Image 1 (cartoon, rainbow, N blue to C red):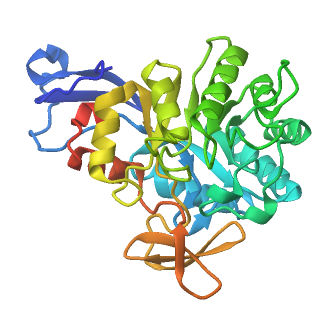
Image 2 (cartoon, helix red, strand yellow):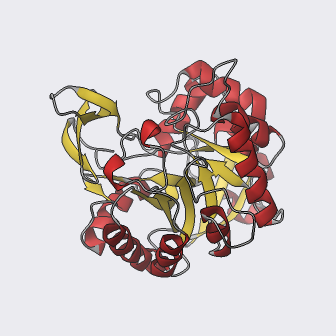
Length: 345
């Protein structure tokens, strides 16, 4: 209702659960003037949308055994400024993926989530991050179809690495994972990839052709879980930025102050503008919780000073294992990095 702008001295009027008026205080209809509360310094934002979240409040979507655990994880974010939440799974066995997808679909249908995101299992073991390499596999159209069936219309995105056989090497409308996802109504997302620039660019172009211009694909947490950008071997990062600059792709940023430096965040916003960036939490069970020991799928995670890292076999801390922030915290961090508030929101 604000048109994407900020109003310094604003009034928001609600009737029941519906917002019926947003505007400057001096433009308020006379019928509501006598109802005005005293002025305050409160800052009101639209409800936030998180399209990549693995859990919170001590509960995890990849590990949930029942709908109560799913709702507990969702509630941690839905009571902190996020109003639309996509639940993310991690790489797992086929049986686990199908069972968790069906469980999440129940909660989507009940209205507590808006969709399901699968981060894997068609990913690069070399860029696995906090994913279990033992469950990664070649692209499998039949698995995509089975997951989509279990999701019952709730599958929104799947993170894939285009260099993995079977993911992006087809030529027809139904012979690789990209085609199967589009056919199921879901969007491919480029991530956890060691592919080169040309391979990523080709996968983006193939996906665009399959989508026929109806939607944009995405890049899963740009920079994280990807081959770094080298000036002679550019890799996936500039390929995704290039496509986003043309309006063909949206890049996710886990801009929580841990996953990315402030300069990186501001540079991406300056380059692309806010309409081609999706801020996400990549949150796991520790979001909103104290430091301690947690799990992310089959992997053990230790949170220290609010940063989640995998526990390794020698007891040391490994790769960053998701986020611990709410999306509102991410917005604050992005503004702190020098991005205007309206752009961050």
